[in-house]
Length: 355
Ligand SMILES: Cc1ncc(COP(=O)(O)O)c(C=O)c1O
Image 1 (tube, rainbow, N blue to C red):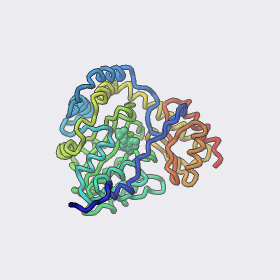
Image 2: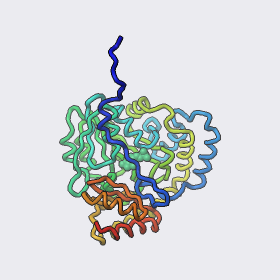
Image 3: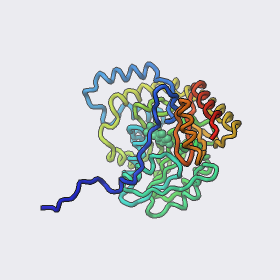
Image 4: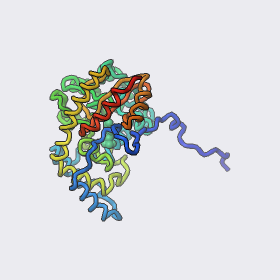
């Protein structure tokens, strides 16, 4: 007989941070999750309803229809595309495809909060490289953090939560210097909101570099955050590995139908990014005028590095029925809505904050 041992889960999960979703408060304006505020177009809702009728059947295992549309849309071969339940799924699959126990994953900090989580779940070790004082990726320091045990580097461009971007020359130079055994994942979840012409298209940088992958999502600009569809573009070796470690049928039939319809409505959906970028400039200028420090952003959100005042700012906004995303002790991130009245409600809360 085995000695009686208490039931337990993996000990290291005790210090795994929970992914904290943006709060949803009835009646409040939700600017906490970088979603678009507008409902999906009728064509997308109709496609979802039609797919729901066949929900007794499994979806396409290989996401064939979504995959074909994305490959065509991007002009890349289908074997260089992997589809997942949100691009966060691809982030996790790439880590699992690259790392075994104790190998290292380098990323800037603060950056997307899922990076340390997917790293630790895979049994890998996260190496956080502080942002520069102006809230950008410190690429020389990230290069210094790479060693023989490093397998993957995440680079979010634009970065979440700071909105900061990397420009073509500095990013190309970085990629040239990263050793071949390390995969660089360029996370372009917010690419469609970028208006700075010197921000590179990650796909162009990845072309010809086997160790560079790009992840993108239909959650943000395409307005399908609730459907869960994202994709990665990478070498066929890596996309095949990502499929191996992915959960079978992770993207539901309804999500696949929504994605196909959204991609078919791409022109209409991408046009909705325009008011967001206009509002971004307006909200940014208004916050600066109020005396807030705000780094320039190319994403659909702004970062307020409020440090010790973050918790009080968050409570104040909640009291004013505006939900922002607080990283207590560090700062608050506020989504820029395409609806001026939602941003005005936030600006009114920011103006009346006395903390
Ligand atoms: C930088 C970044 N990457 C990836 C994601 C994942 O988005 P999704 O899984 O909805 O595609 C997010 C979501 O907030 C993000 O901010």
